[in-house]
Length: 274
Image 1 (cartoon, rainbow, N blue to C red):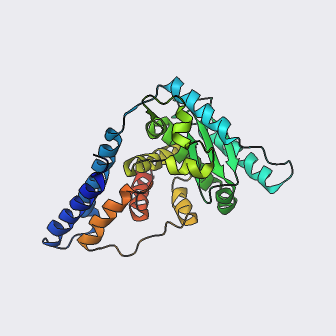
Image 2 (image 1 turned 90 degrees about the horizontal axis):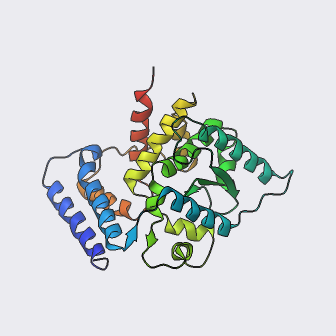
């Protein structure tokens, strides 16, 4: 099944492209359900093809502790810019984790920083949330943007995405090595993260709710997208072949397209606007 998956994906995308090209011109939003269905169905098929099982909360916590220990994030030297960034990440992380909607690992979250990984942040199972120094530097003094990033990563944990993304292979004597391939590094960890596009959108929505609960600006997420280079797509109407291809390529990425995330975030933020 896994060997046939790329062929199935390409065939499905081409079929959608052909069918849509025969119909009237539509906006990208109207074509999204079809193209996204290909990506999400393929993701489900790929996961079902592996011999895996979900983690209980306590198993997830132990797994996260082991991953966190093997990554061996050291505390930056006192008085350095890196130490300032780490203190800020912990401060805002504590604020985010105290929101009423945080329940799964409430009171057990830990916040780390790392110089590796470019402009990024990630969460380990069990509530270990990492932010990279380049990302924290890029966000600067924008506390609301920082809180949104934390809310997004906490959302992956609270919504059970991390437990799903780090499933254990049946029969693995060392599940951490099964994920990291024997090389405990941030880069290898990023390669193992496989959140679906739907999960990414769910984490964005969770971050908006968390921001609202902390009485902060939920639209700060848009500034995060700007910092990450996820700019507004002004080519609002696209050809059906392009849209179908985007649905296919989204399967191979950890995040949906920037235009989709922006539109969803704006809708979510507007729901609670006065």
